[in-house]
Length: 357
Image (cartoon, rainbow, N blue to C red):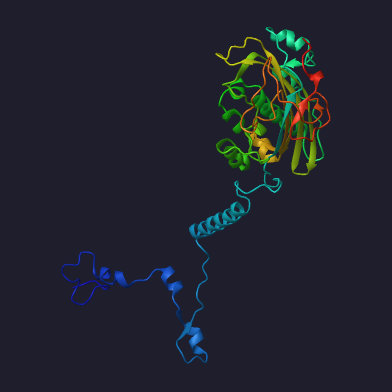
């Protein structure tokens, strides 16, 4: 006979664990019961006036999982970063950048000698008997003045502007490969990119239009006619910096260069003579120019001689050398050593500016 808890016919065959395993799949755990939407009233509640036997439970309120919360936070951070970078991206044009670079305005005035160009075998003798006797040699004649901060530019920024201007002057008037060769890159790399088209057009298609004369950008001689008799070029002049507005610095350079030249090899002249070039250059710098060490050259005013007014000085300078003369006539003498500006398109070289030999 079976026990008191067993079925009348006993435990079915093939059920080692008893019949209770047969109902295991339909037994619900406590969490399942709590999640049920319907709940049966208790016996005490059913004794009251309750027609239905069950009641509907309010749905359980579950918060976001930790993973979902982290994901939402990451999306919010990424979205905020994208907005910030869109407003303050590193390639945005600076608010303090200056106006677009102006095209260079240039004037080149040849100065014709009033007599025969004096010469001597020793260039030192010529220098010693000329107004350039006390000039310094090369870049030493272009000293940097003491830099003083302005209302919107620091001492270092003013010094940087003066240094860039000096570098341009040295490369464009003292480099032998520029003076008597075809090198222009040392000068070109210092210019603001907005002026490069004008620079390239000046050398590709020179024109005496006040915009496209190579001799307005740099000093260079006709190498087929003249060469340097002495590479120790005499220089004297000044540099001055001033603030034009809150975004722009301007540097004014006024220098006189004296070159000892002689006829190119094979021309037959052994004596040297002096050739004088006075350049007044106006540079402009915004903060981007200072950062990249480049300059905007906006004004170039050049007087050079001895030259013949009949020669075209747009592309290259064609110096009159020792023993040569220019045609008579022309305006009154102009002294390139004086501080006043000339107004003639062709002048006459003052007698006092030539060496006394």
